[in-house]
Length: 276
Image (cartoon, rainbow, N blue to C red; front, side, top):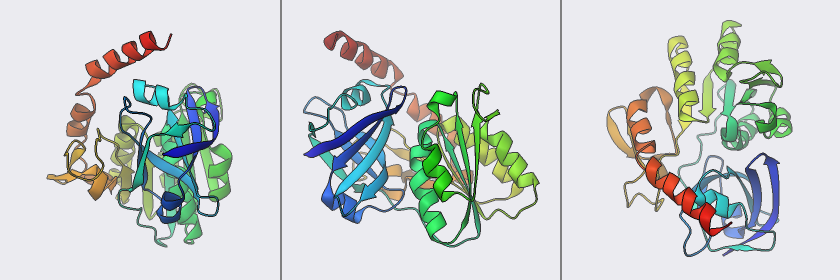
């Protein structure tokens, strides 16, 4: 079990949990994730580790309360316990000194982008951060991203904060400045990552994306998280979660992510009925 050390809402329906997990905190590397299960009835939820503190023995996860599982997980109070915490899982990000890195975080994906951007900065890279959200209130980890970025650019879809537009608009402008960009890291909703890859493919820039398909055991046994990369089947839990964005079959990924939409809606309705 993992005890909840702290809990706070950092945006509407967006929760930050700090969990007591000393072994995971000691071994975790940027890009890796954990799978949490709230209780015996709960589902297994994969969440990237946004931060860890080996001295305190804690890890931090950030998630939106959208489905029945995450809505339940978000209600665990400080001092409460989460039944299962498995990790660290997945392959760590390949952190190297490459030159200039653009880290693009969309919505809750910024929670994944932040630890990677931090590690890239620590490795001596110039980091240009781009953070996007639908509205101002949904922008998360702005100060944290600013602290590890040489330049931070923020967009909101509705123009309620910073620049109105999409992360791809800003990315195109950064590329057009003529500065050599050695790598782009994009984490966020699938349509956003797909759009980023379309921009970088035209410019011939290496692009890495972090995929979060349907996942169950997290060890490569169930095959639920399979994705198609360069025409080959890969498992996001053990071969990823990061892949070459230009090799991802986005159409197949979209189909897999939507396969259980009706079941997810039914679970949410049942959760609301039982908890109100």
